[in-house]
Length: 85
Image (cartoon, rainbow, N blue to C red; front, side):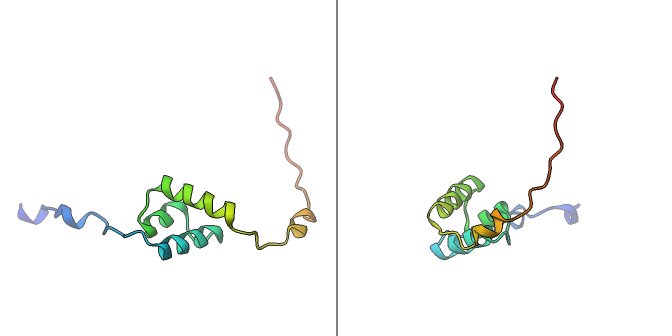
């Protein structure tokens, strides 16, 4: 039965040190939707909650780089009305 024994040390992900470069890469990937929150948190060695708070701070101080006129000129899609009780 020695063949079925699992080495538990190989099941854990390696510990990633949080560096400013990793956090910057994760925030930019989240901003461009190239990475999801769990992957970004894992990339820079944070919990998902820490990554979410860090990303909100990034959004607060990061200037928008898209043209808001394009969004204002977009067509509004009619929504289905919800029937009340």
